Length: 336
Image (cartoon, rainbow, N blue to C red; front, side):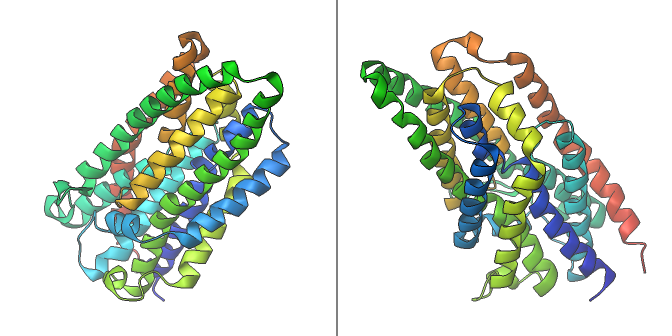
């Protein structure tokens, strides 16, 4: 195994861990925000369903991610190592501050920057809409930008309807909403494991087996799938508590009905993205859904200062990661 291959493997597995720290904790935020269980119980529930999602994931998202860059076989591992390690570093710094930054967005920026450094403009699949699917850097960014608005809209509509129903229910029946939150949280965890898990799996498969590995009949190997799924799920518990606290208490002051509506909308949007091969950001989808659900009640339920802070970080992620990844590629390719 060459140095670049080893770095590519480390970068892919580190990306899985950071996706667990930065994106995956959003699946547990609603349960803790509604005080439906202890952190230990919620974390164990989240880990189990994230692993299940990763093991059941397809390969559509993985193909989209690795298709962003087209360079020679000799440079692929270096580009992927630079992009993934950049996304990991940026996400680690921001997550330590409790901001639900998306490692997925950082990875797209990192791939574009490293690809440009490796082969110029032609080495990057800028894409857009092709064959009814969003592909390439532009396509993925369009999807990442549209998904939060869709999640917020769906969550707001669902929450408006749910509030009408809940208002007519007796008080004892309203307690069942907390049971629904556990199921909705499981759905978000499965969706996240399916979508986020494929990003690391795709990078790992190509670094280990070559650029044509995802087109082969075997696709992603079982050990590659299992290792990424388990690392992502375990990292959710080990490092994501600050992000859970920010999302569960820092964006909205709504009740259990709002949280349930947001989780249902989030799971639907993320699973739809995985089905069409669109690598979405769980952070952006879940936080936008929580804002949408909060606004359907009263706008003062939304903590706009927290929303603005997160939005600024999202906007800066792409250009910062692109520049850092380009520099990282130049440094890595000088290694023996």
